[in-house]
Image (cartoon, rainbow, N blue to C red; front, side, top):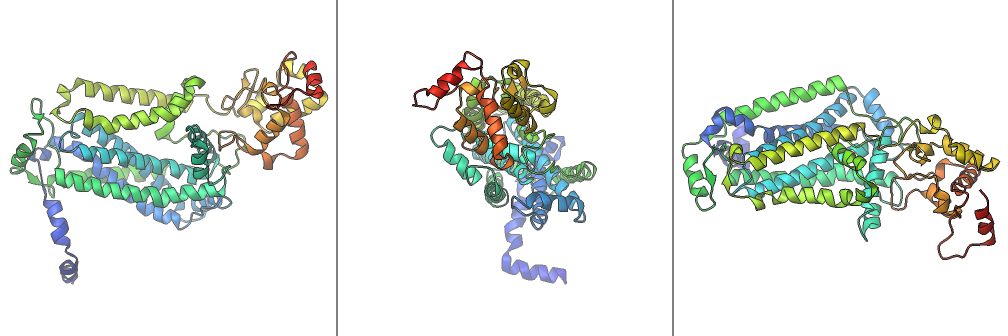
Length: 495
């Protein structure tokens, strides 16, 4: 019965004519040996992508991409929907596993020189697939819509806002407005579910077509070099004694992919889903916002760098890294492929992974984040208390209770995510301070908008306190283009 149905479908769709030659296409005979295990990571990546598709469809049936319901829909999945927590965990660890498998696959291709002629374009498309996968990872973090997601989006907006000339427009386009809100969540949901997956599938299809057209490279042998003038003829000669992919090579892929799936299922069952860590309120204490693990190295690098280098690291460094990946087959598309004859390639891999490991550790442990106990653990410096009026002291209490110290230090005590505010009274006027506190950093930067979380009386006290944050001999900030008024001159004389 099934055979009859299959023949009926095949007569109309042509499955055998299309897919059977793909499965039977020859690969170098050397892949039958132990070296064939180096070629299983790409298939494992696709297997994990399939898990993400299936689990992602299931999650989309419940998840609500609205600012006031996203967090609750995740709680519903975790605690009320049968096995909803397991579905979320599978989705997360399959995504993490896909990043790992892609990195191993690309490292193997680089070390074995498999990107050289005629597979330059195959490598280039692989780099695009890696970028798409990282894009899926980042946008997925935003959909958790917890404090980590809020701060991750705030940092991303701040980074994008540093792009010269068009930075504010990019931030506005990403966030769907001037501040992080429901429009931001909708846009990242569209990116995560529609835009990036569509690009990923398109480039994956192109990647597979290039693999079929250019063939799978044979394991490298010291002394056998790639010469574009003779390579095609030599490869065709090698394939005459090759073996069909539908055999030992496919069996290795299936075995390794099965082990990978078992590992992902075990991790999901043991560790459970990732977040959400809490409601998406940036003023809540106890949050420890850090990027997802594939981006911790950049987080760690920024924490070690001086402020003057931040813009270069944020804007130029990632572009240089991506450009270097694209240029790999341009710089060297011929010659030796064996790692033993390419010490520079081996050194690049060792240095790169050592640096990534060290910076990732720094990203995990660095204090470049809000100091969550600063509001209660670090007192207002005595110097500031002694020169404050009773009204400013009340403002200091608001400053503490609203957790401003988590991100802003006073005389070096407090958080380091935002600038030290010890002399903010010399840089911003009263109106500018009210605007900054109410609306946050222009262009969606790190500073969240507190306009809806502080009443007018608290705002007045807080701003009074900050206006007085300066040394007795320093004048207060003046509005740009205006002459000092009598009031400001008198204020400058006061401590």
